[in-house]
Image 1 (cartoon, rainbow, N blue to C red):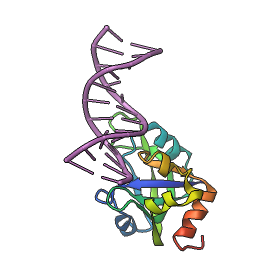
Image 2: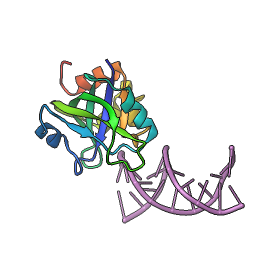
Image 3: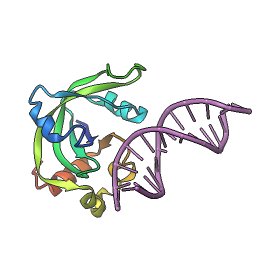
Image 4: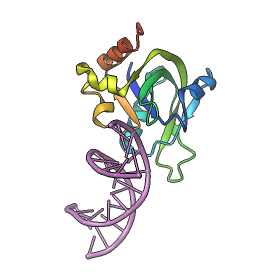
Amino acid sequence: MAHWLFKSEPTTWSFDQQIAAGKKGTFWNGVRNHLAKKHLMAMQVGDRGFFYHSNEDKAIVGIVEVIKPYYPDHTDETGKFGMVDVRAVKALKNKVTLARIKAEPRLVGMTLVNNSRLSVQPVSDEEWRIVLELAGEHG
DNA sequence: GCCAACGTTGGC
DNA sequence: GCCAACGTTGGC
């Protein structure tokens, strides 16, 4: 099963709002980047991803699960981009800040560190495990 | 608020 | 098809 990282500005869409959306989840729209689109298209129902707050928080705060695979984004007039549906799984015990990730030698290869502007990123199994460990989770 | 990184656009 | 100009994102 693949792992991902979803980036959101908490002022636009926060993990608290994601939790409030409940088990039904919500669509993850607004992606207008071809590489991010490629990642969205590769997602399968059941895949899990980190929920990252950019700008204000700069930290991974929770885990979400893909509950509906790629379908067209009705808010995109060009018709080129799509989205998936995700639901909140849980908040991390301890959020993992960007500073902490950058300070972790085993995570220097993370896309978050190297291409912070990409809004949907793949996360390797090892990176997933290490971040969970930093979050005080058992995985 | 600044600026680097990146993607997109448009003139040639 | 190249590349300069511009807009956006996001860390600092």
